[in-house]
Image (cartoon, rainbow, N blue to C red):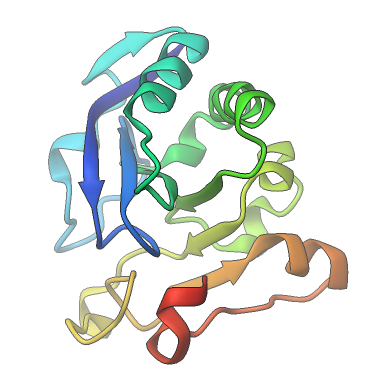
Length: 169
């Protein structure tokens, strides 16, 4: 089972291109200036099976979508459930681009199996003092947009700098 709060079909701010976004429920942090404070309590939202959430997301995808983003809350508060959702999606649409936003730093969660299934991880907690509205796909300067497959392959963080190349992520 997985807890989610909402799904939106047409986002252009939660990753490159037009995206379907699932907002998962629950976050252990209480960042000052949190963008989605209603998603903090783990007991909020709706609980459904991982397969059901994956089916809903796949149904919302059209040819115009660039991919799926998991945001929150913090999707990595439910790492096993997220792994199951993405596994189901990958079996049906292996080419789909998948982004995950998390308050954890990559170094803290680098061994989670779900990382092997995603394309981009936006990591790090939101820090109000580092906030900038000029940033692309992230809220504060401490956050990184990580190319996960290349990071795992090379054994070092490979960041994507969308300010320079947003259309090719």
